[in-house]
Amino acid sequence: MADPGRMAPAATASTQERPAFGLAKLERETLHERAYDEVKKAIMGGTIAPGEPMTIRALAKALGTSVMPVREALRRLVAERALELLPNRSVTLPVMTAEKFDEIVRIRLALEGMMAETAAKHITPDELKRMTRLNDEMIAKLRLGTKKYLALNQEFHFQLYMAARMPQAMSIVETLWLQIGPFLHHVDTDFGAPDFLNHHALMLKALAKRDGGKARSAIEADIGEAAESILASLRASPLK
Amino acid sequence: MADPGRMAPAATASTQERPAFGLAKLERETLHERAYDEVKKAIMGGTIAPGEPMTIRALAKALGTSVMPVREALRRLVAERALELLPNRSVTLPVMTAEKFDEIVRIRLALEGMMAETAAKHITPDELKRMTRLNDEMIAKLRLGTKKYLALNQEFHFQLYMAARMPQAMSIVETLWLQIGPFLHHVDTDFGAPDFLNHHALMLKALAKRDGGKARSAIEADIGEAAESILASLRASPLK
DNA sequence: TTACATCAGCCGTGATCACAAGTCACAAGT
DNA sequence: ACTTGTGACTTGTGATCACGGCTGATGTAA
Image 1: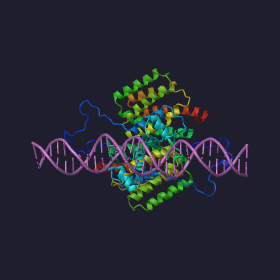
Image 2 (image 1 turned 60 degrees about the vertical axis):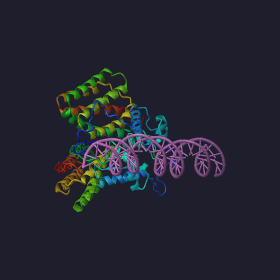
Image 3 (image 1 turned 90 degrees about the vertical axis):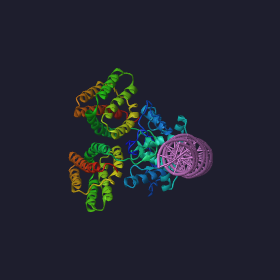
Image 4 (image 1 turned 135 degrees about the horizontal axis):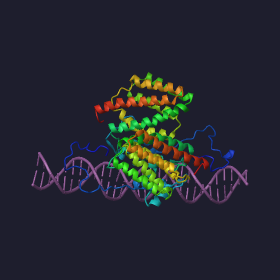
């Protein structure tokens, strides 16, 4: 799959597997993949309270399946560090601590900084246009609530990282956001502060000029200042 | 697990769960954890050939269990990107490509560079001594074969990263090594070249002086030059 | 009222089975 | 000779069940 044309050393025109006819390849999603998506969505949406144990059977009943698909979905989320394994071998949504948050921020600075710098060199005009549109939408819907803001912000960032053409790094960053995501719903920080939006504007300007260094600076400032603001309110009310 | 003493807000002396007596907490390992360890060991050891599909039932028979534990072990390894999901939903050990290798190297430079810099500030004399001992052992057993070298080299690096006190980053780096590991057995590179050992010596010197910048430089040189050497022989014989 | 033993219920784990999709080889047809 | 349909066999998926461990409530004795 990773290397087409290797097993068939000189593919004839008749054996080609290209999308023939007007038919899209109909995908068959397994139940545990759907379960994974659902639980992931619940985690990112802030629906699940941190610390409370979630049982396989309860989730299975909620999803209308047996325990099998849920088991595999949870196992995968644990591997991605989105959920945590208790000594009972039950799983929980981990409680965020200041130390853990700080570490994740430092990882993000290293990784996303590098990706932003790379993205500046590879981004296409179309992608840049899409990012600009996302940012405009963000400003327009600024006061539509934290949830909407967070979703748009994530889309903006991921669109940027996508331009770096680093799929491996992309999936690592996704797991990092998956750990931070649920926590952001429980902290009271004003994400609409003009500073944050300014970083995005600087980012767009750096991308337009293909300036990798400036792009890195912009993303670092964006991550760093947001983290500082969150850490402040985290230290104020330690857990949650 | 991450926050002891939280569920019991004022633990009495009788209900304490601390390691009392000289007794180590006897751990009950589940079958799928053992299956995970075994398959992982096989992957890192270069036993499994890249590209060949591995069936659940065959592994189950080899391990003497049913399919259940194997299924979960494979699922976890796929989540960690150590294995790859085929369209058939079977799993394979991914074939390494130059592009993929290059991306992983760039991620490692960003992540492990940051960790080395952090480690320089936190490392204890004991840990430094242990690293020195590992390096000496590496030099002594230099010609005992690639397998032994790779194991000692990994131990050296991981001992360093451990000193950074960043468990999240640590587990990310582990997955990166898990992807590169199997591949290193199939490429013919002289890992015993004096350059590589020199980087380790520089690293030890930097750590002794608590010089984060020098530590970062040393690790970057170590990773970068090894990668260059491997990429050269990878381009010579593209796959495998 | 308090301390402790008991027991029922729930939990994760793993084995087994049924089923649909996929793979491969062979043979019939062009 | 090459393509195509058919069949048996293998594969991953998901449901169900049994089992041991853990939790929490109940009851009993002090």
